[in-house]
Length: 335
Image (cartoon, rainbow, N blue to C red):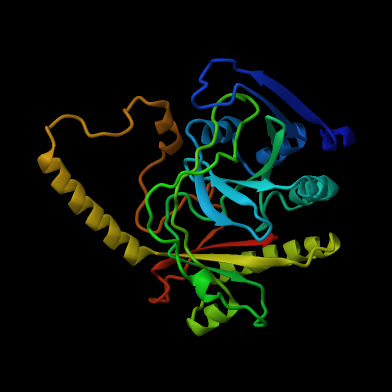
């Protein structure tokens, strides 16, 4: 049972590495975890195993996106693409403390069945006096099914069209040299990784008028429609109680037919590579590697997903041929 003080608690670690792993990590840094018991309880209610959570964040360096939020926030993703790590401000930390008790209560009452962000941990990393605040959420999109188009929908058509600049993907450039500014860490193994920056192409995010002009429609069966609308209604009512009104629906579309075509092309390329190989073992993770435990489930077919992992995903209605090719991952979120 959580106590009132748990919503104010924190834990700290000070690390002095000296010469250990100096090429990858700073010699001295401090790490702080906010409300550890509360976020652990939230992870349990979202059916996230604590060891799996740590493995996702610590086993390999995170992937880093070139995209930024309106506030200048940067986004990182765990190597297995299950969790998003977002840099936030100290003001955001204070705001999270203000709503955390009510958010936890809402998650308890709805049994974790929500389209709102699943907040899983909040941290501060201090290196040479430079403080970086971070919050970890579950990735709204599938960790294995590619999203081919995404829309940010507010239910308004006023100034709701992606600009020409927003519609363009970043150019395909070579690696860039950057000043290291984002350093990530996890509480139980606080010396695990020191984030490196990578280049990444981002999908443009379209908006309400783009959705209309593209003639997009989302077809889901009656049962999924009912559950979705019930979740959305409860989520909106909760946000109204918190007096939060700047929120939207993030819709990602996975094209099954396109994914199958790309997979066939990859297999053909792999076949060509095998012909040129020396007949030894392929490069990859050894069968006995611990990392295989994360993906030990049975193979999935085109467009299939694990609802216990891809909790936001909704399969399109089978009776609609034009939508049979799509699985929709949907989330409501405040910005």
